[in-house]
Image 1: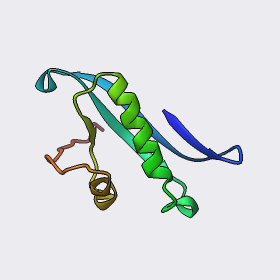
Image 2 (image 1 turned 30 degrees about the vertical axis):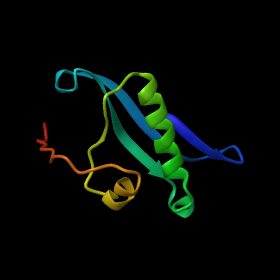
Image 3 (image 1 turned 90 degrees about the vertical axis):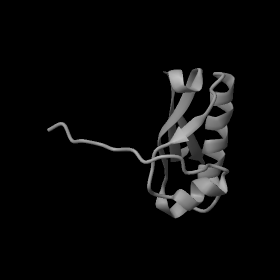
Amino acid sequence: MLVAEHDGEPVGYVAVHRLPALFAGGVVAVVEELYVIPDRRAEGIGAALMAEAEHIASGWGAAHICVATSRAVDFYKGLGYEPTARFLKKGLD
């Protein structure tokens, strides 16, 4: 978990995990969540958090960094991410 702060106050965060993956022949990094408070969006905070997550993932030796989202697709494409597949989910209630 990485947290961005401004004047000692949190303004955003990214949660990234390291997972073993046979398809990748090693490790992949998965971004679980990226959030920037609404009044601080479009200032580069999200991009900076993702850049740091990528740096950390590279240090893990990750083959890929993945984001499962249907939101903010243009944001991620602007950072060089490419759509690859759809995820399916099922509620367990």
